[in-house]
Amino acid sequence: MGDRLKGKVAVVTGSGQGIGKAIAIALAKEGAAVITNNRRKGSAQEDAETAASEIVSLGGRAFPFFGDVANFETAGKLIQTAVDKFGSLDILVNNAGTGNMSAKPWNMTEEEWDTSINAHLKGTFNCVRRACAIMKNLKWGRIINTSSMAWLGNPPHLNYGSAKAGVVGLTKAVAGEMFKYGVTCNAYCPNAATPSTTGAGLLEVITKAYEAGLITKTKFEGMLNPPPAEAIGPFIAYLCTEEARHINGKVFDVKGNQIAVYSDPVKERLIYKEEGLWTIEELIQVVPNYLLPSKEDLEFPQMPE
Picture 1 (cartoon, helix red, strand yellow):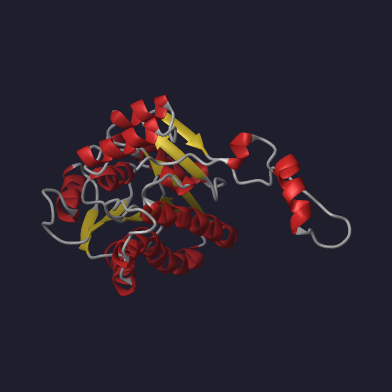
Picture 2: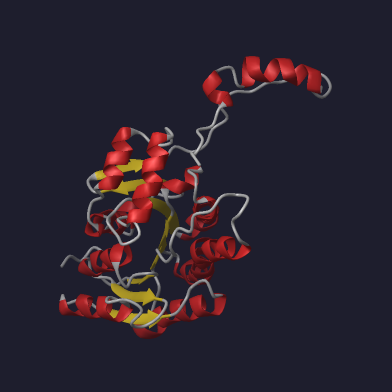
Protein backbone atom coordinates (compact mmCIF):
# COMPACT_ATOMS: atom_id res chain seq x y z
CA MET A 1 0.00 0.00 0.00
CA GLY A 2 1.22 3.50 -0.84
CA ASP A 3 0.32 6.88 0.59
CA ARG A 4 0.24 9.34 -2.32
CA LEU A 5 -3.52 9.65 -1.93
CA LYS A 6 -3.62 9.30 1.86
CA GLY A 7 -6.48 11.29 3.32
CA LYS A 8 -8.29 11.61 0.00
CA VAL A 9 -11.81 10.33 -0.63
CA ALA A 10 -12.79 8.91 -4.01
CA VAL A 11 -15.98 7.88 -5.76
CA VAL A 12 -15.63 5.43 -8.64
CA THR A 13 -18.87 4.80 -10.51
CA GLY A 14 -19.42 1.44 -12.13
CA SER A 15 -16.76 -0.14 -9.94
CA GLY A 16 -18.33 -3.45 -9.06
CA GLN A 17 -16.17 -5.28 -11.57
CA GLY A 18 -13.84 -4.83 -14.53
CA ILE A 19 -12.04 -1.54 -15.16
CA GLY A 20 -13.96 0.36 -12.48
CA LYS A 21 -13.06 -2.16 -9.81
CA ALA A 22 -9.41 -2.12 -10.89
CA ILE A 23 -9.34 1.68 -10.61
CA ALA A 24 -11.01 1.61 -7.19
CA ILE A 25 -8.41 -0.84 -5.91
CA ALA A 26 -5.54 1.19 -7.39
CA LEU A 27 -6.76 4.34 -5.62
CA ALA A 28 -7.23 2.46 -2.36
CA LYS A 29 -3.71 1.05 -2.58
CA GLU A 30 -2.44 4.64 -2.60
CA GLY A 31 -4.35 5.45 0.56
CA ALA A 32 -7.67 6.83 -0.70
CA ALA A 33 -10.95 5.86 0.89
CA VAL A 34 -13.27 4.70 -1.89
CA ILE A 35 -17.01 4.59 -2.48
CA THR A 36 -17.63 1.71 -4.89
CA ASN A 37 -20.76 1.66 -7.01
CA ASN A 38 -22.93 -0.25 -9.41
CA ARG A 39 -26.64 -0.21 -10.23
CA ARG A 40 -28.00 -3.16 -8.27
CA LYS A 41 -26.78 -5.47 -5.55
CA GLY A 42 -26.14 -8.98 -6.77
CA SER A 43 -26.61 -8.07 -10.43
CA ALA A 44 -23.42 -10.02 -11.22
CA GLN A 45 -21.00 -12.31 -9.43
CA GLU A 46 -19.05 -9.20 -8.46
CA ASP A 47 -20.64 -5.94 -7.39
CA ALA A 48 -19.92 -2.80 -5.36
CA GLU A 49 -20.11 -4.76 -2.11
CA THR A 50 -17.63 -7.45 -3.15
CA ALA A 51 -15.30 -4.76 -4.53
CA ALA A 52 -15.46 -2.82 -1.27
CA SER A 53 -14.84 -6.01 0.71
CA GLU A 54 -11.76 -6.77 -1.37
CA ILE A 55 -10.37 -3.30 -0.71
CA VAL A 56 -10.96 -3.70 3.02
CA SER A 57 -9.25 -7.11 2.96
CA LEU A 58 -6.19 -5.38 1.47
CA GLY A 59 -6.09 -2.97 4.40
CA GLY A 60 -7.93 -0.11 2.71
CA ARG A 61 -11.16 1.76 3.38
CA ALA A 62 -14.23 1.38 1.20
CA PHE A 63 -18.01 1.51 1.27
CA PRO A 64 -20.47 0.28 -1.39
CA PHE A 65 -23.31 2.33 -2.88
CA PHE A 66 -25.95 0.81 -5.14
CA GLY A 67 -27.79 3.03 -7.58
CA ASP A 68 -27.95 4.23 -11.19
CA VAL A 69 -26.03 7.49 -11.66
CA ALA A 70 -28.07 8.23 -14.79
CA ASN A 71 -30.67 9.41 -12.26
CA PHE A 72 -29.81 12.92 -11.08
CA GLU A 73 -31.02 12.43 -7.50
CA THR A 74 -29.29 9.06 -7.17
CA ALA A 75 -26.01 10.58 -8.33
CA GLY A 76 -26.39 13.24 -5.66
CA LYS A 77 -26.91 10.59 -2.98
CA LEU A 78 -23.80 8.76 -4.17
CA ILE A 79 -21.64 11.87 -3.87
CA GLN A 80 -23.17 12.71 -0.48
CA THR A 81 -22.39 9.20 0.73
CA ALA A 82 -18.67 9.93 0.28
CA VAL A 83 -19.02 13.01 2.49
CA ASP A 84 -21.15 11.22 5.08
CA LYS A 85 -18.95 8.12 5.34
CA PHE A 86 -15.47 9.58 4.93
CA GLY A 87 -15.87 13.33 5.41
CA SER A 88 -15.01 14.66 1.94
CA LEU A 89 -14.95 14.14 -1.80
CA ASP A 90 -11.61 14.72 -3.50
CA ILE A 91 -11.62 12.33 -6.47
CA LEU A 92 -14.36 11.36 -8.89
CA VAL A 93 -13.84 8.70 -11.55
CA ASN A 94 -16.83 8.39 -13.88
CA ASN A 95 -16.67 4.85 -15.18
CA ALA A 96 -20.32 3.72 -15.20
CA GLY A 97 -21.86 2.87 -18.54
CA THR A 98 -23.84 0.26 -20.39
CA GLY A 99 -23.37 -2.16 -23.26
CA ASN A 100 -22.72 -0.92 -26.79
CA MET A 101 -26.04 -1.31 -28.63
CA SER A 102 -25.32 -1.35 -32.34
CA ALA A 103 -27.77 -0.06 -34.95
CA LYS A 104 -27.80 1.85 -38.22
CA PRO A 105 -28.79 5.55 -38.30
CA TRP A 106 -32.05 4.62 -40.02
CA ASN A 107 -33.22 1.97 -37.57
CA MET A 108 -31.85 2.94 -34.16
CA THR A 109 -34.70 3.30 -31.70
CA GLU A 110 -35.22 6.24 -29.39
CA GLU A 111 -34.78 3.86 -26.44
CA GLU A 112 -31.39 2.66 -27.72
CA TRP A 113 -30.28 6.26 -28.18
CA ASP A 114 -31.53 7.45 -24.79
CA THR A 115 -30.14 4.44 -22.91
CA SER A 116 -26.62 5.05 -24.18
CA ILE A 117 -26.69 8.84 -23.77
CA ASN A 118 -28.13 8.57 -20.25
CA ALA A 119 -25.72 5.89 -19.07
CA HIS A 120 -22.53 7.43 -20.44
CA LEU A 121 -23.06 11.18 -20.83
CA LYS A 122 -25.87 12.13 -18.48
CA GLY A 123 -24.54 9.87 -15.73
CA THR A 124 -21.14 11.53 -16.05
CA PHE A 125 -22.69 15.01 -15.91
CA ASN A 126 -24.87 14.11 -12.91
CA CYS A 127 -21.85 13.14 -10.82
CA VAL A 128 -19.65 15.97 -12.10
CA ARG A 129 -22.36 18.49 -11.25
CA ARG A 130 -22.54 17.33 -7.63
CA ALA A 131 -18.79 16.87 -7.22
CA CYS A 132 -17.87 20.32 -8.54
CA ALA A 133 -19.95 22.04 -5.87
CA ILE A 134 -17.91 20.27 -3.18
CA MET A 135 -14.49 20.50 -4.84
CA LYS A 136 -14.94 24.21 -5.57
CA ASN A 137 -15.16 24.87 -1.85
CA LEU A 138 -12.30 22.50 -1.04
CA LYS A 139 -10.09 24.23 -3.63
CA TRP A 140 -8.81 20.79 -4.69
CA GLY A 141 -10.15 17.95 -6.76
CA ARG A 142 -9.56 15.39 -9.48
CA ILE A 143 -12.26 14.42 -11.98
CA ILE A 144 -11.54 11.67 -14.50
CA ASN A 145 -14.11 10.74 -17.11
CA THR A 146 -14.20 7.61 -19.22
CA SER A 147 -14.48 8.09 -22.97
CA SER A 148 -13.65 5.64 -25.75
CA MET A 149 -11.89 5.65 -29.09
CA ALA A 150 -15.46 5.62 -30.42
CA TRP A 151 -15.55 9.38 -29.70
CA LEU A 152 -13.74 9.77 -33.03
CA GLY A 153 -16.90 8.64 -34.79
CA ASN A 154 -16.19 4.98 -35.46
CA PRO A 155 -19.33 3.18 -36.70
CA PRO A 156 -21.54 1.30 -36.05
CA HIS A 157 -22.16 2.44 -32.46
CA LEU A 158 -23.43 5.92 -33.26
CA ASN A 159 -25.24 6.26 -29.92
CA TYR A 160 -22.21 5.11 -27.93
CA GLY A 161 -19.79 7.19 -30.01
CA SER A 162 -21.97 10.26 -29.64
CA ALA A 163 -22.14 9.82 -25.88
CA LYS A 164 -18.38 9.37 -25.60
CA ALA A 165 -17.72 12.41 -27.80
CA GLY A 166 -20.01 14.31 -25.46
CA VAL A 167 -17.90 13.14 -22.52
CA VAL A 168 -14.82 14.65 -24.19
CA GLY A 169 -16.61 17.97 -24.70
CA LEU A 170 -17.88 17.92 -21.12
CA THR A 171 -14.39 17.16 -19.84
CA LYS A 172 -12.82 20.11 -21.62
CA ALA A 173 -15.58 22.49 -20.52
CA VAL A 174 -15.31 21.42 -16.87
CA ALA A 175 -11.50 21.65 -17.06
CA GLY A 176 -11.77 25.26 -18.14
CA GLU A 177 -14.27 26.14 -15.42
CA MET A 178 -12.68 24.37 -12.47
CA PHE A 179 -8.90 24.74 -12.84
CA LYS A 180 -8.88 28.09 -11.04
CA TYR A 181 -10.30 26.29 -8.02
CA GLY A 182 -7.50 23.71 -7.94
CA VAL A 183 -9.62 21.06 -9.68
CA THR A 184 -8.47 19.20 -12.78
CA CYS A 185 -10.68 17.29 -15.19
CA ASN A 186 -9.31 14.80 -17.70
CA ALA A 187 -10.67 11.91 -19.77
CA TYR A 188 -9.23 8.62 -20.92
CA CYS A 189 -10.10 5.93 -23.43
CA PRO A 190 -9.46 2.47 -21.99
CA ASN A 191 -8.48 -0.68 -23.81
CA ALA A 192 -8.71 -3.65 -21.48
CA ALA A 193 -10.23 -7.11 -21.17
CA THR A 194 -13.78 -6.87 -19.82
CA PRO A 195 -16.99 -8.79 -20.57
CA SER A 196 -17.94 -6.10 -23.10
CA THR A 197 -14.61 -6.18 -24.96
CA THR A 198 -14.11 -9.93 -25.23
CA GLY A 199 -17.51 -11.11 -26.46
CA ALA A 200 -18.22 -12.72 -29.83
CA GLY A 201 -20.43 -9.80 -30.88
CA LEU A 202 -17.61 -7.30 -30.59
CA LEU A 203 -15.24 -9.60 -32.48
CA GLU A 204 -17.64 -9.55 -35.43
CA VAL A 205 -17.90 -5.75 -35.33
CA ILE A 206 -14.16 -5.05 -35.16
CA THR A 207 -13.48 -7.62 -37.89
CA LYS A 208 -15.87 -5.77 -40.19
CA ALA A 209 -14.28 -2.46 -39.20
CA TYR A 210 -10.81 -3.79 -40.01
CA GLU A 211 -11.93 -5.20 -43.36
CA ALA A 212 -13.50 -1.82 -44.18
CA GLY A 213 -10.25 0.01 -43.44
CA LEU A 214 -11.66 1.79 -40.38
CA ILE A 215 -8.90 0.49 -38.09
CA THR A 216 -5.30 -0.50 -38.74
CA LYS A 217 -3.98 -4.06 -38.54
CA THR A 218 -2.04 -3.16 -35.39
CA LYS A 219 -5.14 -1.77 -33.68
CA PHE A 220 -7.22 -4.74 -34.83
CA GLU A 221 -4.74 -7.25 -33.44
CA GLY A 222 -4.50 -5.27 -30.23
CA MET A 223 -8.27 -5.31 -29.80
CA LEU A 224 -8.25 -9.09 -30.17
CA ASN A 225 -5.90 -9.42 -27.19
CA PRO A 226 -6.63 -6.57 -24.76
CA PRO A 227 -4.51 -6.21 -21.62
CA PRO A 228 -6.02 -6.92 -18.19
CA ALA A 229 -8.20 -4.30 -16.52
CA GLU A 230 -5.63 -3.93 -13.73
CA ALA A 231 -3.29 -2.25 -16.22
CA ILE A 232 -5.54 0.83 -16.24
CA GLY A 233 -5.35 1.56 -12.51
CA PRO A 234 -1.85 3.02 -12.06
CA PHE A 235 -2.30 5.78 -14.66
CA ILE A 236 -5.66 6.85 -13.25
CA ALA A 237 -4.16 6.92 -9.76
CA TYR A 238 -1.29 9.02 -11.11
CA LEU A 239 -3.71 11.61 -12.52
CA CYS A 240 -5.12 11.96 -9.01
CA THR A 241 -1.80 12.81 -7.38
CA GLU A 242 -0.42 16.22 -6.52
CA GLU A 243 2.33 15.62 -9.08
CA ALA A 244 -0.33 15.65 -11.83
CA ARG A 245 -1.89 18.94 -10.70
CA HIS A 246 -1.07 20.73 -13.97
CA ILE A 247 -2.56 18.05 -16.25
CA ASN A 248 -5.97 19.39 -17.22
CA GLY A 249 -8.44 19.05 -20.07
CA LYS A 250 -6.53 16.21 -21.71
CA VAL A 251 -7.80 13.02 -23.33
CA PHE A 252 -5.61 9.94 -23.01
CA ASP A 253 -5.61 6.49 -24.58
CA VAL A 254 -4.56 3.80 -22.10
CA LYS A 255 -3.74 0.28 -23.24
CA GLY A 256 -1.53 -1.77 -20.95
CA ASN A 257 1.95 -0.26 -21.02
CA GLN A 258 1.00 2.10 -23.87
CA ILE A 259 -0.28 5.54 -22.92
CA ALA A 260 -1.01 8.19 -25.55
CA VAL A 261 -2.50 11.67 -25.45
CA TYR A 262 -4.86 12.94 -28.14
CA SER A 263 -4.09 16.24 -29.79
CA ASP A 264 -6.66 19.01 -29.59
CA PRO A 265 -8.61 19.72 -32.81
CA VAL A 266 -7.03 22.48 -34.87
CA LYS A 267 -8.07 24.32 -38.02
CA GLU A 268 -6.15 22.59 -40.77
CA ARG A 269 -6.87 24.84 -43.74
CA LEU A 270 -8.66 28.14 -44.35
CA ILE A 271 -10.26 29.85 -47.30
CA TYR A 272 -10.98 33.56 -47.05
CA LYS A 273 -12.78 36.05 -49.26
CA GLU A 274 -11.87 39.68 -48.66
CA GLU A 275 -15.16 41.21 -49.77
CA GLY A 276 -18.66 39.78 -49.64
CA LEU A 277 -19.87 36.26 -48.95
CA TRP A 278 -18.91 33.18 -50.88
CA THR A 279 -21.24 32.17 -53.66
CA ILE A 280 -22.10 28.55 -54.36
CA GLU A 281 -20.38 28.79 -57.74
CA GLU A 282 -17.17 30.04 -56.11
CA LEU A 283 -17.28 27.36 -53.43
CA ILE A 284 -17.66 24.63 -56.06
CA GLN A 285 -14.29 25.75 -57.43
CA VAL A 286 -12.45 26.72 -54.24
CA VAL A 287 -13.37 23.99 -51.73
CA PRO A 288 -11.95 20.97 -53.63
CA ASN A 289 -8.88 22.93 -54.77
CA TYR A 290 -7.90 24.61 -51.51
CA LEU A 291 -9.96 23.51 -48.50
CA LEU A 292 -10.11 19.76 -49.28
CA PRO A 293 -7.46 19.29 -51.96
CA SER A 294 -6.81 15.55 -51.65
CA LYS A 295 -9.06 12.60 -52.42
CA GLU A 296 -8.68 11.36 -48.83
CA ASP A 297 -10.18 14.64 -47.56
CA LEU A 298 -13.34 14.00 -49.54
CA GLU A 299 -13.85 10.41 -48.41
CA PHE A 300 -14.88 8.81 -45.15
CA PRO A 301 -14.35 5.08 -44.56
CA GLN A 302 -17.56 3.13 -44.85
CA MET A 303 -18.78 0.30 -42.64
CA PRO A 304 -19.87 -2.70 -44.78
CA GLU A 305 -23.48 -3.89 -44.65
